[in-house]
Structure formats: structure tokens, C-alpha cells
Image (cartoon, rainbow, N blue to C red; front, top):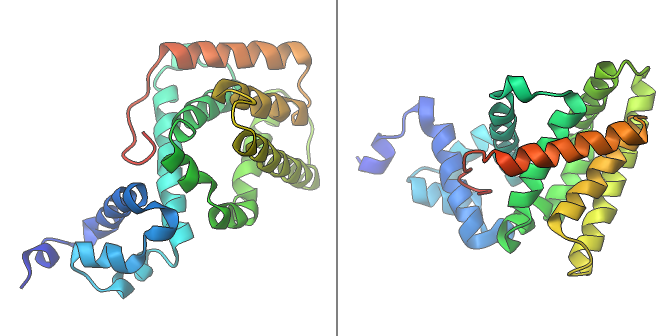
Amino acid sequence: MDQTTDTHKPANLREEILKIAGVMFLRYGYSGTTFQKIADKLGIVKSTITYHFKNKYLLMEELIDGFFELLKTFIDSYPEEYKNKYWRHCVVYIYAYRRIMSSPRTMELFYHKDQQQQWMNHKIDTVSRIYEQVSQDFHKSYDEKDLRIKVRMDMGARVQLYACFHENPGAMTIDEYCYYHLYHMGILCRLDELTIQENIRQAFDFADSHQPPAHFVFG
């Protein structure tokens, strides 16, 4: 039996698929990475991959989710510096954007048009929870309809912000990109100007003074 195939046990195969996929995404890009290439590298049949990940979007989504969880876990390891949920999400996005947008390859992976089309519908619940957490933390009233509208406004603004950044090189720095997104989040959460500015400043201060561990795809 082929040694590569023999060493892949059910308990770690999903992790191995993610590792190989991450390497290939960086090497071949989003479009150039296929389930067949991943299967050939692992010495398995393609249907084994589709058993774990129905499509390439879901595979990439798990890599992205793992990246964000890495950042959240790192931030949470400093409980003495924790401010509030808005501050926490500000730090997460600062870390994420600084890494994702520092390289054309990682930016292409995160913002690939097919990925974004799926994300616009698939991540509504995830983003809704962010707004729900911030609203609760600041004792703001909300309902499910209100949250959904905010999420749609948030997602639309992100698309436009990225288009501006991508189509107008030099129009804004990565940190300015972060600021505009975080400021818009604060406005949608109905936070006052002073609270927004203070939390964004403190989030940048934290991000500048604490370096999270590297992620094998997004740096």
C-alpha cells in the first residue's frame, strides 16, 4: 500500500486536507487550486475531500474561520487589557486586514469574487452575532430585523470599500482601510463619536504592541 495513503487516519485527514489546500492556495491561487490537485498530493480519491468539504468555498471558509479564531484566541489571552466587544472586534479586523491585504496573493484568496458572492449570503448569521454582541455590551436595544438590515448595510459597505482600495492604488493605506470599516461598524451599532474614536484608537494601540502568532495561509 502507498505509504502516504496508509498514514492518513480518519482523525487527522480533515486537518491534512486543510494544510495541503492552504499551501496550494498560496502557490496556485484560488482558481488554480482544485480538489483533484489536493487529492493527488494526499494520495486519496477526490470524493474523500468532497465528503469533508462539499465545495471549494467551504474549504476556504474553514481556513478563514480558523485564521479569525487564531486572532480572537490571541486577543483573549490578554484579559487584563480587554475593553468591550466593539474593541475586541476592532482589534480582530485590524490584525486580519493588515495580514490579508499585505500580499496580493492572500488578498486575492480572501476577496475572490466567487468567495465573496457566497460570503454575502453565508455569513449573515455570523455578522449578525457581532452586532448582537456589541449591542448587548453597550445596552442598546435591537431586534432580529434590525440586525439583518445592519448586516446587509455592513456587507455592502465592505464591498464598496474594497472596490475603492483595489481600483485606486494609493488612495488609502491598509490602516485607513481598517479605520473606515471599524468606524462604519460603530455607526451601525449606534455608538457615539467619542466611544467610536476611543475604541478604535485603543484597538490600534493594542495591535501595534502585541504580535499574534502566524497563520500558515494568511501570515
